[in-house]
Amino acid sequence: MAIPNVRIPSRQLYIDGEWREPVKKNRIPIISPATEEIIGEIPAATEEDVDIAVEAARRALARDDWGSTTGAQRAKYLRAIAAKILERKSELAKLESLDCGKTLFEAAWDMDDVAASFEYYADLAEALDSKRKTPVDLHLDSFKTYVLREPLGVVGLITPWNYPLLMATWKVAPALAAGCAAILKPSELASITCLELGEICREVGLPPGALNILTGLGPEAGAPLVSHPHVDKIAFTGSGATGVKIMTAAAQLVKPVTLELGGKSPIVVFDDIDNLDLAVEWTLFGCFANAGQVCSATSRLILQESIASEFLERLLLWIKNIKISDPLEEDCKLGPIVSSGQYEKVLKFISKAKDEGATILCGGERPQHMKKGYYVQPTIITDVNTSMEIWKEEVFGPVLCVKTFKTEEEAIELANDTKYGLASAIMSKDVETCERFTKAFQTGIIWFNCSQPTFTQLPWGGRKRSGFGRDLGEWGLENYLNIKQVTQYTSVEPWAFYKSPSKV
Ligand SMILES: NC(=O)c1ccc[n+]([C@@H]2O[C@H](COP(=O)([O-])OP(=O)(O)OC[C@H]3O[C@@H](n4cnc5c(N)ncnc54)[C@H](O)[C@@H]3O)[C@@H](O)[C@H]2O)c1
Ligand SMILES: C[N+](C)(C)CCCC=O
Ligand code: NA
Image (tube, rainbow, N blue to C red; front, side):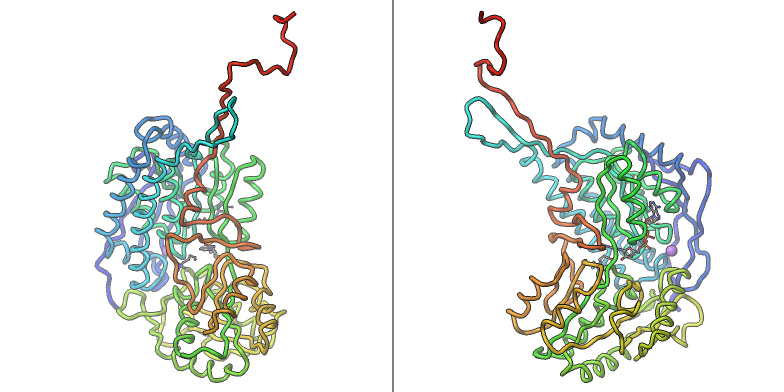
């Protein structure tokens, strides 16, 4: 096994521009998903730390060095952060891989995306200066009006472990671009790189309190953020169950939330595809990248019956080439699941599918050559019916389930046969078929002839039980802006609704 030449920094909470020990001094061990060993620890914030961080954020908004900045000034901080991320890319990628088990290659990809997101929102922060005040012409002589776009205030950002720094960045970068003061609560299962973002913010001189980073458990550090009266908005990415808790708690204060939740996304493959291998590779990538721990994973393969057996044979051949190893090893294509809890959950989904009568076409177990770590083989499940758990529930592991279809109507029905609505993919050479599916798919993201490519400029989010609101693109920035209308009476004439006492 490759021994990583990277030290895991020991950090405190990042509050008000400095490192602070949690009030209760609690810490949480970091367990390597590849070796099951304790490799470090993170600070565990509680309600008391949330109060301190919220006050620091409020002070930042009240101070000129953050609260009165122009978008162009904020863009400089965002670009400086992007530059530092790239400078430390190799180290950050290793830390991410050690912490959550993703392959080093994918972790390095993430770091490029992180830097690109900070750069992108730097551009949008600059552009915001000219859009801050928009006159609205009412075609009236007596009124002049305009609309202001202002920072929303103090925002709480609660994020998951599958793309730790990237998911945090999708919220931190637009929140800072908008001029908000933010409190980030990353997942307790993978917080290392998010804490390093704190060090980067300190190094680039981001004004104290503009970004605070509180690591810790969901109920202890996340919940108090949601119910804090001075947190103006919660942006959340994570599981549906937590999303419901957050929405319920936020509703008590009529606090706005955006929720990016899970999915059970379909990939529909038609028999007119020219290149079977191309479709096979996207199918694999769509379900097994990041060991299937992707909210948008296309984990339901819906195959046209006429090519089903040939397609499955090709899938089995390609799967043999997936290198399962320590995620830091060169060419590793499948690392471990993030934690023992998630690992057990994935194996339970597979055994329940077997119990319900499905066939495990390949995989289904821990790979024999991996003696330690939370590894699961890439798994394909056939003979699935639509009442089975494996068809309906998000596994969040390398598990693909397969059904076949004869007609387009049947394919659409199967694709939409889910409570989720995040993403869908279609593989066909016929543009009109693809367009009909675009209309029919009940999801926020649609991929033609591919699965998963994600671009910072495009809106990301779902509908149905996959949540609401959009990260990324200009929509991501809107999440953190308050819209304020200003109406001015410009006439010198009386309003004349009441009778004036001076006019007897
Ligand atoms: N739609 C998307 O863009 C997207 C992206 C990544 C992950 N996900 C989803 O996230 C899930 C996996 O992530 P996870 O296991 O980290 O999710 P999770 O819901 O367990 O945790 C997410 C975050 O919420 C916090 N949290 C937990 N309980 C809380 C509470 N009561 N109050 C406030 N915060 C609380 C956690 O500490 C963590 O930071 C999957 O379902 C996946 O589909 C969605
Ligand atoms: C950029 N990816 C790979 C599509 C990740 C999406 C985030 C959801 O888990
Ligand atoms: Na971890």
